[in-house]
Image (cartoon, rainbow, N blue to C red; front, side):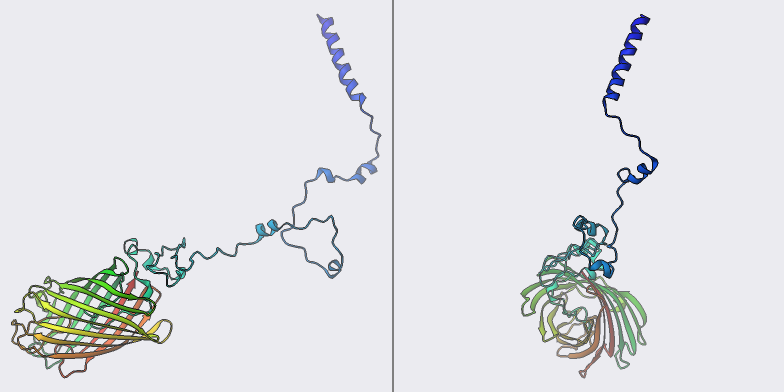
Length: 393
């Protein structure tokens, strides 16, 4: 057994040594010869330069070597910072920017401006009902804020503040003032049909005759339909119906009667670089004894002064066609109050207003006007300041 293992070991060593010595024996080298060959094959390849080396005048005159590798184009792409993404808002397609939630406009008049996306683009509920953006240069009327109806189909939220001075010669009331804090709302169902809430709010009344009073206004809701929508000529014709309920407080001359129905029409037209909006309607009370009947009209004109600032001029009138029987007076309350006075049929009150509108951005605007009567009759309006802030979606 031991002899067999010895023979197997000797056979294995013989086969291995035969394979080694079968190769040609390398000649011995000196240390100088080994160093002269270098260690290029044993070193990792150097990394390519991040930027092109500065070319000296001597190098620019020398033709580059044919075996010098040209830098790859992909190498430049890897080391160059991105210059920006292609435009994400092609004309007529609406905004698809990842940084905002612009809604696709109803029409394709203008490409989406992603830089204009502000608070108005981040309220999901109202963003489902985008405004008709084909008439963006028009400005909403300011004075007579309840009945001067914008003809466009808009989704908006509008805060209103009114400070109205009452003349000292006013019967019963005497000198005083009225403040109104209100919020209007519009929801555009589509480019033609919209729902509007034109009247609400809280009133404070201070007069010598009745003292200080506070209370809620009646609520006015309605529909608006755009009959003619001519984008090319920037012309609009709208009509609708508004119902004013009797939920308000009688302490501030609200809540009387049995509601008022108001059918109306409104037109809008661009004239040069300015815009004209005119509206008219007929107030038909449910209880003709408690409230008077009247026809109103409002004319608004705005003209741009700068890219954001526009001058505003407006004219408002109301003609009383039938008196009520609630109070033995020959004056009425105008656009905000219906006293139901018994001696106002045939009266005509005309006021004018001047002011300005400033666009903070494509969604938000601030407007203010000063209004005063130009007719012989004043009724309850000696002068009025109206300020609005409108957030359009």
